[in-house]
Image 1 (cartoon, rainbow, N blue to C red):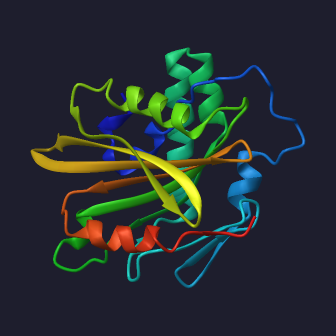
Image 2 (image 1 turned 90 degrees about the vertical axis):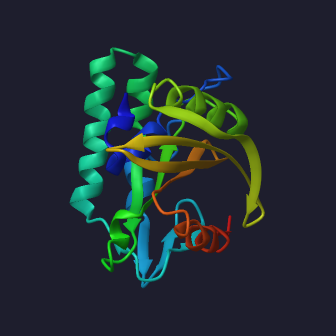
Length: 214
């Protein structure tokens, strides 16, 4: 349902499988507070609440704060229309950290979208359950097929879980990578949309720079 707008594709990462009845303590920071604690120093993104850093692809163009807020608002608006309480709660606790596209050179800016966001989980879950739930949500679209089933990665000493899908948008083939980790009841996720597979090398280099201080 959300896959119709590829530019806002990270909103697909808003379904969470609740595997425990233990409610997260209210004193944990909100999704808004977590997102607000992030900042850029050149291409180095740091989020003090997550104790997380990543070196974003050099030369890529970042979406503005207003553009990121528009994605969040659209996500919540769409969730409300579903009348699904779980999806609405997930959307209410999801925020964009950043979005970036390749430089405006020979059409490169239309070749990829690198997005990162967080979801503050209202109940505890595992990263495996989280990514499995999102896989089911993404594949509910008739326009997508599974390209690579769930697999595991390690960035900055932390376990990430991922899957990949393929589809068509305006007769253009694209591939999407969904990658997530769960730490302190917060899901940190990346959604990478690739129209040009050559950009995948640049994305991989960026992901390898992930570090955690907490």
